[in-house]
Image (cartoon, rainbow, N blue to C red):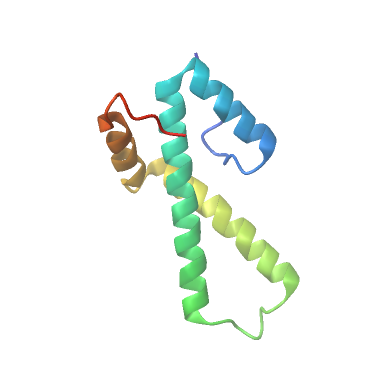
Length: 106
């Protein structure tokens, strides 16, 4: 059975999050892998945002439109990077699989 969420999306809205939750009940291993990949994408996106802030703002490109474009670009780039992986999702998934059976995660 194929994944409910395409690998190039993030569960940023309630509909996608609901699909991921449904998938976790039907296919827990695939849902855990998808959640780990999405966490990696969000981590990369936050890292890119922090790097941009550390570099300072350019007066030439300091507009609301440019900020919106930059946020959308960073989101897309982080999703693409997480699709190829930097190893964080694999490590997180490994840790989730190693969790004791008696401990439930929310």
